[in-house]
Amino acid sequence: MRYRLTFVVGLAVGYVLGTRAGRERYEQLKKSARQVAQNPAVRNTAETAAQQGRHYAGVAYHTVSVKVGERMPEAVAGRVRSLRERSSHDGGGDDWGTSNT
Image (cartoon, rainbow, N blue to C red; front, side):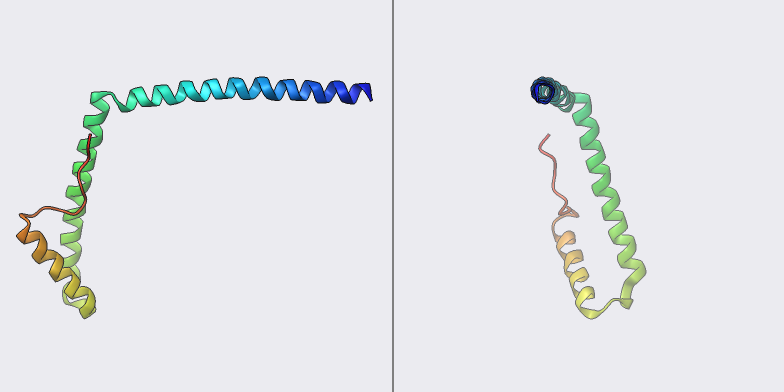
């Protein structure tokens, strides 16, 4: 019985020490990630990638709508037409949003 009690106490102490060390390491990693995310070079790169993504999504949308053309069901074709008209009236803007970075 004494060995079991020693084992359980050792297990409990190991668990407490391990979770405390794990929490400290987690907080350290979280702080490092926050510092990287706030770096101006990282933020500019992320914004550039987002802008390129919006651009290529628009190009893909246009390419698919031109190639598919009249082969679409009328309900889908009407929706595509309304999106085209809306984007031409909005100055060619997109619905992808912008980053607040």
